[in-house]
Length: 373
Image (cartoon, rainbow, N blue to C red):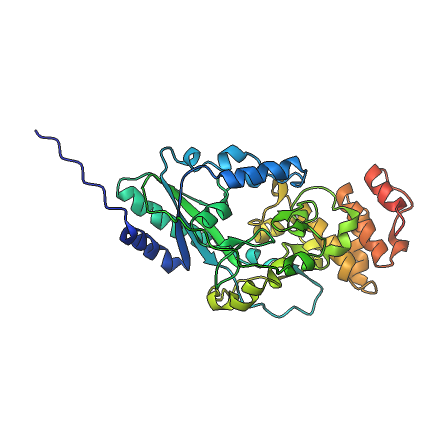
Protein backbone atom coordinates (compact mmCIF):
# COMPACT_ATOMS: atom_id res chain seq x y z
CA UNK A 1 0.00 0.00 0.00
CA UNK A 2 1.46 3.30 -1.07
CA UNK A 3 1.90 5.96 1.60
CA UNK A 4 -0.13 9.11 0.95
CA UNK A 5 1.93 12.02 -0.25
CA UNK A 6 2.06 14.94 2.23
CA UNK A 7 -0.03 17.92 1.30
CA UNK A 8 2.01 20.79 -0.09
CA UNK A 9 2.56 23.75 2.24
CA UNK A 10 0.58 26.85 1.33
CA UNK A 11 2.29 29.82 -0.22
CA UNK A 12 2.94 32.16 2.70
CA UNK A 13 2.81 35.36 0.72
CA UNK A 14 1.08 38.70 1.33
CA UNK A 15 -2.26 37.21 0.30
CA UNK A 16 -1.89 34.50 2.93
CA UNK A 17 -1.10 37.12 5.59
CA UNK A 18 -4.21 39.02 4.47
CA UNK A 19 -6.24 35.85 5.11
CA UNK A 20 -4.75 35.58 8.59
CA UNK A 21 -5.58 39.21 9.22
CA UNK A 22 -9.15 38.59 8.16
CA UNK A 23 -9.48 35.94 10.85
CA UNK A 24 -8.73 38.53 13.55
CA UNK A 25 -11.23 41.18 12.49
CA UNK A 26 -14.36 39.61 14.03
CA UNK A 27 -12.62 39.96 17.40
CA UNK A 28 -12.03 43.71 17.10
CA UNK A 29 -8.42 43.69 15.89
CA UNK A 30 -7.71 46.78 13.80
CA UNK A 31 -3.96 46.57 13.11
CA UNK A 32 -1.70 43.66 12.20
CA UNK A 33 1.84 43.14 10.97
CA UNK A 34 4.59 40.55 10.67
CA UNK A 35 8.04 40.65 12.24
CA UNK A 36 11.01 38.33 11.90
CA UNK A 37 11.58 35.81 14.69
CA UNK A 38 15.20 36.90 15.13
CA UNK A 39 16.47 37.82 18.59
CA UNK A 40 15.09 41.16 19.79
CA UNK A 41 18.54 42.59 20.37
CA UNK A 42 17.34 46.18 20.76
CA UNK A 43 14.89 45.18 23.49
CA UNK A 44 17.44 43.00 25.26
CA UNK A 45 19.96 45.85 25.36
CA UNK A 46 17.29 48.17 26.77
CA UNK A 47 16.30 45.63 29.45
CA UNK A 48 19.92 45.11 30.46
CA UNK A 49 20.43 48.89 30.77
CA UNK A 50 17.28 49.36 32.88
CA UNK A 51 18.24 46.54 35.22
CA UNK A 52 21.80 47.83 35.57
CA UNK A 53 20.48 51.32 36.33
CA UNK A 54 18.16 49.98 39.04
CA UNK A 55 15.02 51.21 37.31
CA UNK A 56 12.91 48.03 37.49
CA UNK A 57 12.01 48.27 41.22
CA UNK A 58 11.42 44.54 41.51
CA UNK A 59 9.22 44.40 38.41
CA UNK A 60 9.37 40.98 36.80
CA UNK A 61 7.31 40.53 33.63
CA UNK A 62 9.66 40.50 30.61
CA UNK A 63 12.54 41.69 32.84
CA UNK A 64 12.58 38.38 34.74
CA UNK A 65 14.22 36.35 31.98
CA UNK A 66 15.46 38.67 29.21
CA UNK A 67 16.98 35.85 27.19
CA UNK A 68 13.61 34.15 26.98
CA UNK A 69 11.47 37.25 26.47
CA UNK A 70 13.67 38.54 23.64
CA UNK A 71 14.18 35.25 21.79
CA UNK A 72 11.05 34.17 19.90
CA UNK A 73 12.74 30.92 18.83
CA UNK A 74 12.82 29.84 22.47
CA UNK A 75 9.03 30.13 22.50
CA UNK A 76 8.66 28.12 19.30
CA UNK A 77 11.55 26.00 18.05
CA UNK A 78 12.38 26.81 14.46
CA UNK A 79 10.25 29.99 14.44
CA UNK A 80 10.57 32.06 11.30
CA UNK A 81 8.17 34.93 11.88
CA UNK A 82 5.83 36.60 14.35
CA UNK A 83 2.29 37.67 13.43
CA UNK A 84 1.35 40.70 15.54
CA UNK A 85 -2.12 42.06 16.33
CA UNK A 86 -3.36 45.20 18.10
CA UNK A 87 -6.87 45.64 19.50
CA UNK A 88 -8.18 49.02 20.71
CA UNK A 89 -9.49 49.38 24.24
CA UNK A 90 -10.70 52.98 24.29
CA UNK A 91 -14.21 53.16 25.74
CA UNK A 92 -16.44 56.09 26.60
CA UNK A 93 -15.90 57.22 30.17
CA UNK A 94 -19.00 56.75 32.33
CA UNK A 95 -19.99 59.49 34.76
CA UNK A 96 -18.30 59.45 38.12
CA UNK A 97 -20.60 58.09 40.86
CA UNK A 98 -21.71 60.40 43.64
CA UNK A 99 -20.18 58.18 46.31
CA UNK A 100 -16.45 58.35 47.08
CA UNK A 101 -14.94 56.42 44.19
CA UNK A 102 -11.50 55.47 42.94
CA UNK A 103 -10.33 55.66 39.35
CA UNK A 104 -9.34 52.56 37.34
CA UNK A 105 -6.89 52.65 34.41
CA UNK A 106 -8.72 52.23 31.10
CA UNK A 107 -7.02 48.99 30.11
CA UNK A 108 -8.39 47.34 33.26
CA UNK A 109 -12.06 48.34 32.92
CA UNK A 110 -12.83 45.05 31.20
CA UNK A 111 -10.78 42.10 29.98
CA UNK A 112 -9.67 43.34 26.58
CA UNK A 113 -7.20 40.49 26.28
CA UNK A 114 -9.92 37.81 26.11
CA UNK A 115 -11.13 38.76 22.59
CA UNK A 116 -7.54 39.42 21.53
CA UNK A 117 -6.59 35.89 22.57
CA UNK A 118 -9.51 34.52 20.54
CA UNK A 119 -8.20 36.41 17.52
CA UNK A 120 -4.69 35.06 18.02
CA UNK A 121 -5.96 31.52 18.47
CA UNK A 122 -7.90 31.82 15.21
CA UNK A 123 -4.63 32.67 13.47
CA UNK A 124 -2.68 29.93 15.27
CA UNK A 125 -5.34 27.34 14.43
CA UNK A 126 -5.15 28.21 10.74
CA UNK A 127 -1.36 28.06 10.74
CA UNK A 128 -1.39 24.68 12.47
CA UNK A 129 -3.96 23.36 10.04
CA UNK A 130 -1.59 24.36 7.26
CA UNK A 131 1.23 22.36 8.81
CA UNK A 132 3.12 25.01 10.78
CA UNK A 133 3.91 25.31 14.45
CA UNK A 134 2.19 28.33 15.96
CA UNK A 135 1.81 29.56 19.55
CA UNK A 136 -0.16 32.68 20.55
CA UNK A 137 1.00 35.08 23.28
CA UNK A 138 -0.92 37.97 24.87
CA UNK A 139 -0.08 39.73 28.14
CA UNK A 140 2.63 37.12 28.56
CA UNK A 141 6.14 37.35 30.02
CA UNK A 142 7.45 35.12 27.24
CA UNK A 143 7.90 37.90 24.69
CA UNK A 144 8.35 41.68 24.59
CA UNK A 145 5.19 42.40 22.63
CA UNK A 146 5.84 46.11 22.08
CA UNK A 147 9.19 45.34 20.45
CA UNK A 148 7.80 42.75 18.05
CA UNK A 149 4.97 45.17 17.22
CA UNK A 150 7.53 47.88 16.50
CA UNK A 151 9.53 45.46 14.37
CA UNK A 152 6.32 44.48 12.54
CA UNK A 153 5.80 48.11 11.50
CA UNK A 154 2.67 48.70 13.57
CA UNK A 155 3.95 51.79 15.38
CA UNK A 156 6.79 53.70 16.99
CA UNK A 157 7.89 54.03 20.60
CA UNK A 158 6.60 57.18 22.26
CA UNK A 159 8.59 59.02 24.89
CA UNK A 160 6.40 57.35 27.53
CA UNK A 161 7.65 53.96 26.22
CA UNK A 162 4.19 53.07 24.88
CA UNK A 163 3.78 51.96 21.29
CA UNK A 164 2.03 54.66 19.26
CA UNK A 165 0.13 53.62 16.15
CA UNK A 166 0.04 56.16 13.30
CA UNK A 167 -3.36 57.79 13.14
CA UNK A 168 -4.55 55.81 16.14
CA UNK A 169 -2.51 56.53 19.28
CA UNK A 170 -1.73 54.15 22.12
CA UNK A 171 -5.06 52.85 23.47
CA UNK A 172 -4.30 49.29 22.32
CA UNK A 173 -3.53 45.87 23.77
CA UNK A 174 -0.96 43.84 21.85
CA UNK A 175 -0.48 40.16 21.17
CA UNK A 176 1.29 37.91 18.71
CA UNK A 177 1.60 34.42 17.22
CA UNK A 178 5.10 32.99 16.93
CA UNK A 179 5.24 30.54 14.05
CA UNK A 180 7.50 28.42 11.89
CA UNK A 181 5.73 29.79 8.81
CA UNK A 182 8.03 32.04 6.79
CA UNK A 183 5.58 34.92 6.47
CA UNK A 184 6.76 38.04 4.61
CA UNK A 185 8.11 40.34 7.31
CA UNK A 186 8.10 44.10 7.58
CA UNK A 187 11.42 45.69 6.68
CA UNK A 188 10.63 49.35 7.37
CA UNK A 189 10.11 50.65 10.92
CA UNK A 190 7.52 53.35 11.46
CA UNK A 191 9.18 56.74 11.70
CA UNK A 192 9.18 58.50 15.05
CA UNK A 193 6.16 60.78 15.30
CA UNK A 194 6.87 62.53 18.60
CA UNK A 195 9.36 65.11 17.32
CA UNK A 196 9.95 67.73 20.05
CA UNK A 197 6.74 67.00 21.97
CA UNK A 198 7.28 66.24 25.66
CA UNK A 199 3.75 66.41 27.03
CA UNK A 200 3.89 62.91 28.49
CA UNK A 201 7.07 63.73 30.43
CA UNK A 202 5.56 66.91 31.83
CA UNK A 203 2.22 65.28 32.69
CA UNK A 204 3.60 62.36 34.70
CA UNK A 205 2.51 63.07 38.30
CA UNK A 206 5.69 61.63 39.79
CA UNK A 207 8.30 62.42 37.13
CA UNK A 208 8.69 58.73 36.36
CA UNK A 209 9.65 59.36 32.70
CA UNK A 210 13.30 60.21 33.23
CA UNK A 211 14.06 60.75 29.56
CA UNK A 212 12.40 59.70 26.31
CA UNK A 213 11.62 56.00 26.56
CA UNK A 214 13.20 55.55 30.01
CA UNK A 215 10.78 54.88 32.87
CA UNK A 216 11.67 54.61 36.56
CA UNK A 217 9.31 51.83 37.63
CA UNK A 218 9.71 52.87 41.26
CA UNK A 219 7.95 56.13 40.46
CA UNK A 220 5.43 54.89 37.87
CA UNK A 221 2.04 54.79 39.59
CA UNK A 222 0.82 51.96 37.36
CA UNK A 223 3.52 49.76 38.91
CA UNK A 224 3.41 51.33 42.39
CA UNK A 225 -0.26 50.33 42.67
CA UNK A 226 0.49 46.74 41.61
CA UNK A 227 3.68 45.90 43.47
CA UNK A 228 3.49 44.35 46.94
CA UNK A 229 4.68 46.14 50.04
CA UNK A 230 4.19 49.55 51.61
CA UNK A 231 3.62 52.39 49.15
CA UNK A 232 6.46 54.90 49.65
CA UNK A 233 5.25 57.87 51.68
CA UNK A 234 6.40 60.43 49.12
CA UNK A 235 4.20 58.87 46.43
CA UNK A 236 0.94 58.51 48.35
CA UNK A 237 -0.45 61.97 47.70
CA UNK A 238 0.40 61.57 44.00
CA UNK A 239 -1.74 58.41 43.91
CA UNK A 240 -4.72 60.73 44.19
CA UNK A 241 -7.90 58.83 43.42
CA UNK A 242 -6.23 56.01 41.46
CA UNK A 243 -6.89 52.45 42.63
CA UNK A 244 -5.30 50.58 39.72
CA UNK A 245 -3.42 51.84 36.70
CA UNK A 246 -2.54 55.36 35.54
CA UNK A 247 -3.40 56.91 32.17
CA UNK A 248 -1.96 60.42 32.56
CA UNK A 249 0.84 60.10 30.01
CA UNK A 250 -1.57 58.73 27.40
CA UNK A 251 -4.33 61.25 28.07
CA UNK A 252 -2.09 64.16 27.06
CA UNK A 253 -0.42 62.46 24.06
CA UNK A 254 -1.44 64.36 20.89
CA UNK A 255 -1.73 61.29 18.58
CA UNK A 256 -3.72 59.44 21.22
CA UNK A 257 -6.00 62.39 21.99
CA UNK A 258 -6.47 63.35 18.35
CA UNK A 259 -7.01 59.93 16.84
CA UNK A 260 -7.99 57.59 19.66
CA UNK A 261 -11.80 57.79 19.31
CA UNK A 262 -11.52 57.04 15.58
CA UNK A 263 -10.56 53.49 16.46
CA UNK A 264 -12.61 53.20 19.64
CA UNK A 265 -13.55 49.72 20.79
CA UNK A 266 -17.24 48.82 20.93
CA UNK A 267 -19.06 49.93 24.08
CA UNK A 268 -19.03 47.30 26.82
CA UNK A 269 -21.85 47.71 29.37
CA UNK A 270 -19.83 45.96 32.08
CA UNK A 271 -16.99 48.46 31.82
CA UNK A 272 -15.99 49.71 35.25
CA UNK A 273 -14.12 52.97 35.35
CA UNK A 274 -14.82 53.68 39.02
CA UNK A 275 -14.78 51.65 42.22
CA UNK A 276 -16.61 52.71 45.36
CA UNK A 277 -13.91 53.00 48.01
CA UNK A 278 -15.73 52.07 51.23
CA UNK A 279 -17.12 48.75 49.92
CA UNK A 280 -13.57 47.75 48.98
CA UNK A 281 -12.60 48.21 52.59
CA UNK A 282 -15.66 46.58 54.14
CA UNK A 283 -16.38 43.72 51.71
CA UNK A 284 -15.12 40.18 52.12
CA UNK A 285 -11.92 38.90 50.53
CA UNK A 286 -14.03 36.48 48.49
CA UNK A 287 -16.15 39.30 47.08
CA UNK A 288 -13.10 41.34 46.10
CA UNK A 289 -11.39 38.42 44.37
CA UNK A 290 -14.60 37.43 42.59
CA UNK A 291 -14.96 40.92 41.15
CA UNK A 292 -11.37 42.07 40.65
CA UNK A 293 -9.37 38.85 40.58
CA UNK A 294 -8.48 39.30 36.91
CA UNK A 295 -6.24 42.21 37.92
CA UNK A 296 -2.62 41.56 38.70
CA UNK A 297 -2.52 41.05 42.48
CA UNK A 298 0.60 39.78 44.22
CA UNK A 299 -0.14 36.32 45.61
CA UNK A 300 -3.73 36.78 44.40
CA UNK A 301 -4.42 38.58 47.68
CA UNK A 302 -6.99 41.42 48.02
CA UNK A 303 -4.94 43.13 50.73
CA UNK A 304 -3.23 45.12 47.97
CA UNK A 305 -6.57 46.48 46.74
CA UNK A 306 -7.39 47.45 50.32
CA UNK A 307 -3.99 49.13 50.70
CA UNK A 308 -4.62 51.23 47.61
CA UNK A 309 -8.15 52.03 48.79
CA UNK A 310 -6.82 53.36 52.11
CA UNK A 311 -4.47 55.71 50.27
CA UNK A 312 -7.30 56.90 48.02
CA UNK A 313 -9.51 57.41 51.07
CA UNK A 314 -6.80 59.53 52.66
CA UNK A 315 -6.63 61.64 49.49
CA UNK A 316 -10.31 62.17 48.70
CA UNK A 317 -12.32 60.96 51.70
CA UNK A 318 -14.63 63.18 53.77
CA UNK A 319 -13.24 63.45 57.27
CA UNK A 320 -16.68 64.41 58.61
CA UNK A 321 -18.28 61.22 57.27
CA UNK A 322 -18.99 58.82 60.14
CA UNK A 323 -18.58 55.83 57.80
CA UNK A 324 -15.09 57.02 56.84
CA UNK A 325 -14.13 57.43 60.46
CA UNK A 326 -15.50 53.97 61.30
CA UNK A 327 -13.56 52.28 58.50
CA UNK A 328 -10.32 53.99 59.45
CA UNK A 329 -10.79 53.10 63.11
CA UNK A 330 -11.22 49.45 62.12
CA UNK A 331 -8.12 49.43 59.91
CA UNK A 332 -6.04 51.13 62.57
CA UNK A 333 -6.69 47.98 64.60
CA UNK A 334 -6.44 45.53 61.69
CA UNK A 335 -4.39 42.35 62.09
CA UNK A 336 -2.31 43.26 59.02
CA UNK A 337 0.43 45.77 59.91
CA UNK A 338 0.83 46.75 56.26
CA UNK A 339 -2.79 47.93 56.22
CA UNK A 340 -2.37 49.67 59.58
CA UNK A 341 0.51 51.69 58.12
CA UNK A 342 -1.69 53.07 55.36
CA UNK A 343 -4.61 53.61 57.74
CA UNK A 344 -2.35 55.77 59.92
CA UNK A 345 -1.34 57.83 56.90
CA UNK A 346 -4.95 58.22 55.72
CA UNK A 347 -6.22 59.20 59.16
CA UNK A 348 -3.48 61.79 59.60
CA UNK A 349 -4.03 63.20 56.11
CA UNK A 350 -7.74 63.66 56.84
CA UNK A 351 -6.99 65.36 60.15
CA UNK A 352 -8.32 62.43 62.17
CA UNK A 353 -5.29 62.01 64.38
CA UNK A 354 -7.51 61.41 67.40
CA UNK A 355 -8.36 58.00 65.93
CA UNK A 356 -4.74 56.84 65.91
CA UNK A 357 -3.19 54.81 68.74
CA UNK A 358 -0.25 56.17 70.69
CA UNK A 359 1.96 53.27 69.63
CA UNK A 360 1.87 49.89 67.87
CA UNK A 361 3.66 46.54 68.30
CA UNK A 362 4.93 46.52 64.71
CA UNK A 363 8.00 48.64 63.79
CA UNK A 364 6.60 49.77 60.43
CA UNK A 365 3.44 51.08 62.05
CA UNK A 366 5.40 52.72 64.89
CA UNK A 367 7.57 54.47 62.32
CA UNK A 368 4.48 55.74 60.50
CA UNK A 369 3.00 56.97 63.77
CA UNK A 370 6.20 58.83 64.59
CA UNK A 371 6.60 60.43 61.17
CA UNK A 372 5.71 64.10 61.06
CA UNK A 373 2.87 64.93 58.61
